Amino acid sequence: MGTFTSFRKAYGALKDSTKVGLAKVNSEYKDLDIAIVKATNHVECPPKERHVRKIFSATSVIRPRADVAYCIHALAKRLSKTRNWIVAIKTLIVIHRTLREGDPTFREELLNYSHRGHFLQISNFKDDSSPLAWDCSAWVRTYALFLEERLECFRILKYDIESERLTKSSPTASKAHSRTRLLNCDELLEQLPALQQLLYRLIGCQPEGSAYHNYLVQYALALVLKESFKIYCAINDGIINLVDMFFDMSRHDAVKALDIYKRAGQQAESLADFYDYCKGLELARNFQFPMLRQVTL
Image (cartoon, rainbow, N blue to C red; front, side, top):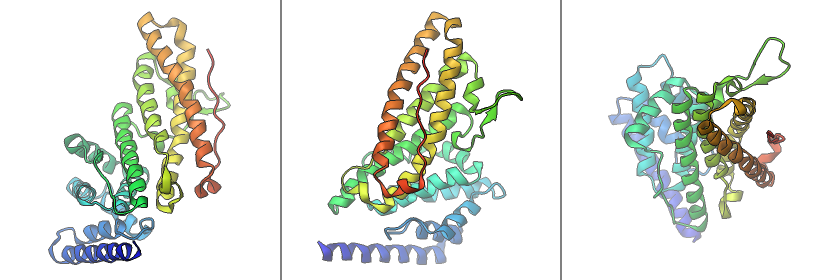
């Protein structure tokens, strides 16, 4: 097994160096192609910051949309071609970080691209080269589902939940809220189910088996965990708003609202269990997990 693992590492390094060499000779987007290969190489460590920053720069608002589209195409190709869990998870990390930290143009172009090809839906991905690779492959698939749902949630909400700034509902309010606190009934009944589906995918990102202790999985999981806080706040503020207007709703809307309310209670319990599970990980040392409180009718 040790010899096989060493061979895979050497073969992966050779493939990476070959791709870099080809990009230097053949690519119109040489610097970007090299940055993508190096950021998503076969080395079992998080993408190096200097390569990720080059990708941020290549997808900034000052670049032509064609450049942004090319970057997404190159990442999609990298993801679809690989059978190595390390390359797959690092490609997803690059996509996730660019969504979180990059320019909004990347998210907009990615949404257009995903509607055409759904490249984040990698339900058949597997790396069966070792027990670790098998367990990590399962987590890669759930991570991809979360990112796909994140895009769908943005499509429905028309804003990115992670980049939202909490605001006060009035100048005299003592506490800042998510914008769901101020939505009308129709908007709530559309947006809350989308947020709850996103939270469902997030809670599904629970590493099992050997993946539980893997540093690269934990690095990606930390990005997911950071998003759980704002998603939960948005749902909770929306539920408070929903409860306030519950008795003024039509019967049809009230039935929908009650289903949303029930699911919120169930998800609060599931999220608390997920946090407890994650508190056993090394990454938990850097997190302050919030208290979860359910709104009552």
